[in-house]
Image (tube, rainbow, N blue to C red):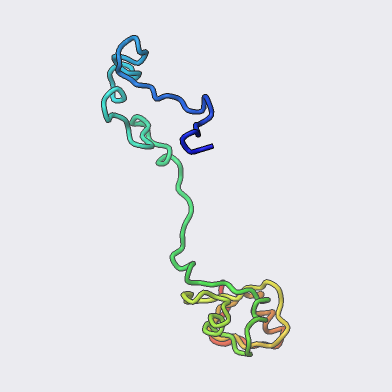
Length: 149
């Protein structure tokens, strides 16, 4: 088989309908556009979403949702991930160095997920109430930032 011998399967390709070639061709005179009106004219049709003057559905329905501008800047760290951190003092720079938070994050929050077995000192990082209680129960300390809500 060669490239010049290849062809599509029979019936898979329809021939394009040529409009405006007389009455006997089947699509003469108005060429399937009907009689008069905006849709019969060249270049005449409404914009997307236009409902003939009726209030469009995208304006009738209530809006919802919200994209926070600060959400990408705040990183969450699970309590169980603190085991990967070397050293006893945990702050934002240490979390960045251990690849637990992205380099561009400005704040971090430690959430209660999993557990912690060693005593650590958390400095300048937000904590949830549960995470704060778990760190203190393990013998750790929290400095500077209070629990985030």
